[in-house]
Length: 258
Image (cartoon, rainbow, N blue to C red; front, top):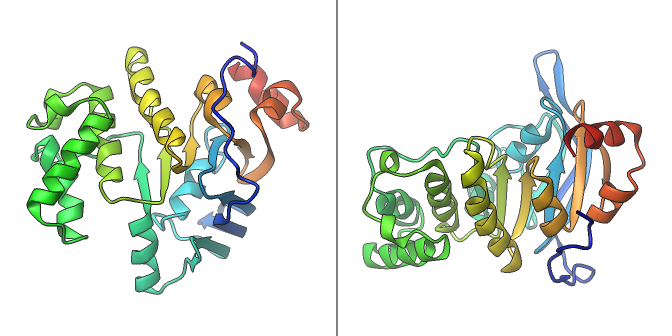
């Protein structure tokens, strides 16, 4: 498969503003440095795919972007709001950043509908009727409106992950972070989740996706970033990565997974 086979319509990112700014971000777990001077910028509506071996810091980095992990030094700014210890800033950032994890993290005792409406009702004070209407609209969008009254245990893994995406979208975020969203799925369920993510990207959602799904990266990403040993080693377009990577570490990684 060549990089020209299928790519999304080009978005005008040149004139877009930076919605995510990270400058010299460090993160330590005891004596282990998980992030080492990571700097990057993401524009509004840009889709960035993050690659790297296990333990390279890629998941830690995106968890720092909504303060699931607290960075130790450096600077993170989300949509003009600096990430710091001010609770108001954190709440403002978290209201704009949705996240989807490897594990679906749905509440098992709540129906699909109630999983999706819980956040809008509790955090955004949305009336129940409005929240229910939004949930049904989102379930239509991810292709499983008929599952609204079921419980997570009654769904396949792919369906659960689509509910998790709908739940994140229900908070009407400006940015979506995906931490290996298909890694816990059976192979036949991966496509249904990636299709939802492609639709999101086409709609103009700003996305950072940690994944090893190279077909998705080729087709959907505006830019790829390769992490190794806590550092951002190389970044570029899909064409750059798949046809002309510069760093030996990047070449080795790609040779092992392609």
